Image (cartoon, rainbow over all chains, first blue to last red):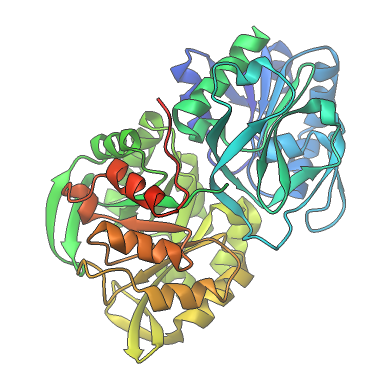
Length: 201
Length: 254
């Protein structure tokens, strides 16, 4: 059972539907016990960084997530969910993230339209099972205004170009992040989720 | 590179997709879920669903359609029509929509855009503007399905929408809507030059050249309904044509 952390607003139903297509059972939850018993965790992405961290802290999930990840449980962060893995975000202030990965989150430079919205291509970096069976570059659906900076290069699996390089797929051990929405990226997105599920099984 | 988007728009009434000309002569055309699947397979980049009745009784039927669509297709879609409160937005997002399009309610209550953007994030709040030319190069915002002139300047309203936190604008040129004479390029361009958020051009698509023209002139996406519903333009053909004319589009390699 996959625990999808349900920390408030937004469309997480699509993610559940996508997992169902892969015959993966998932549950929307904020219950620490359910999260501890789950085979893996997905931290989805909606809304603002501070609100999300506040919500996670308020229901006391910050420590649960950190402990489970340290114990080796696979976690996938999608969009804002991926950004929450990092040390800090500068979204309307200066906020601490979960600190599972080294790096910061900053606003996309205003030399391009913000939010970065639509289908953009992924360029592969470090080899990973995540991008197996996928072409050298492929389109996925992005919608975000902030992006990760100063990450460790060894964790970068895929990036896109939008007013500079934007980390799009990151992986470090049992921690995986996708800045785009695989559940909204058509057949390619489903393939990415299938690869992820295969990788952690 | 970020691709320009092609977006079929589906007007939904009592659970069916309908298409009228200039908001009149509404006729039944298809089942929304079947159409959504077809467009997804054809390579549509996004979909828009408008609840055109938006009466309370039929809201549940519409929300059910939204959920069915989310279940069947894995591309993003926007929902509009009858969105008046933060709770309305919450409902459609929870039903599986990715973005919510707000039109008249934002004119009456601009704070709604601000509250919604703060709560759900700008990325899912779309401000939809119905504009009509009232004097040469002067476009006003219209509401109530195009019947009421608010007197508000459309370009100023677009700018204000961005400041309030909208993450995208749909610019619906009401003079050209349903006429198939082409998008309103000057209006779209004027707004694209004023704001720094993505712009979806709407109203007037009849032939492939119309898409090319508006995507070359500032639009990030082009929305259309009847040309797709009635198979006058095939999305794969349209994308090949755009690509041949140096527009970056997404074409999945099978």
